[in-house]
Image (cartoon, rainbow, N blue to C red; front, side):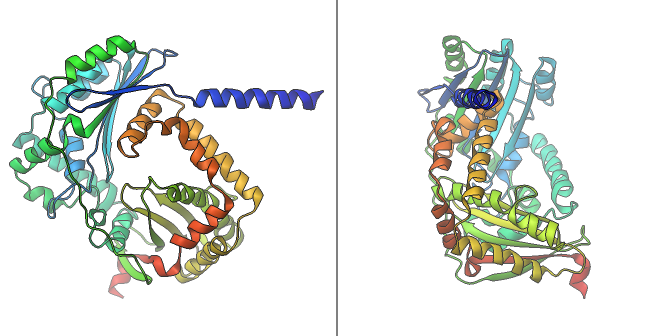
Length: 440
């Protein structure tokens, strides 16, 4: 009887999870090209208003890197109707929170308010798009902010420039070769007219998606959106034609030095396909297999059993044009970086030549299911997913359908993808060393 009750509970739980995963939404376009997505959830009196722009670190001219990240800061300066420095104060005083972030491919702004302040959130985002003040004073102020951020997060942080060092060696032509935050000399050299031109090109309604999610009334929300965003003029169509990279056909060996570390690190990197491709999803599973948790293959082998590494991690850095698959290790004691790289290659070779066990494969499927459910567990998370799926993947329905991509992955797919992308002849091997080693 107890086993029957447990089985009944499992079926009931699975039904609840399946129900929780379904996200209903509606979408449409304004006349100016702004795509709008609405998600109604009246379970709590909160609402998220968000705008994602299809502009990121890669959208720049040579000698003018870091512009999108710079605008992430600059567009909080103020507008014609929001006084300088008052943006965060207005949000906080009305019970809300807000933030923004920039990747190589997009920039995302959002506010979370009590639902009775929905109109305030829409007005503020329309102000950001239509009436920002882009003046020399604001540019100079944010230039110092960005410089301090770079010093804190990159230049003065242990292993802070590791990713940039990999980008330097993995890309030759594509803008992914440069850091998302940019180079300070580029921002220093940019003129006010260049900043204004950058805004006019990229921060236009037809290069953005607006998502409103939470405790809303659909018809009232549509009217407010039309009132606030409808008058904004459509921008010129944006075309992107970034140079293509030649395949890596033999191992690239590189070194970089960091004044903030005493223990070296090794990073192995492979160039991989766009995050829109099924193979990118397979690489996410391979990352879980290799380094997610204490029972993962690399952690158990290098950290737990052989006591050769302090830390190990495999990451699929997904991007719109090319991905980067990175394996990072810090040695323990006298273990050499070469030894770590050899042991890692042994595990990668197994993936290329053998299929993983059914038991390990089922664990990966379970992790994918859990991750999918968790990504849609909050209104703010749903808003982010809806915006990203539409703007970058071209398929808003992924918010409900993405799990089917993972469910369709097979053990054969894992073997095939490892064999296609994770070859020694297609990798960059970076020795990331203490600066003291440079003088030796």
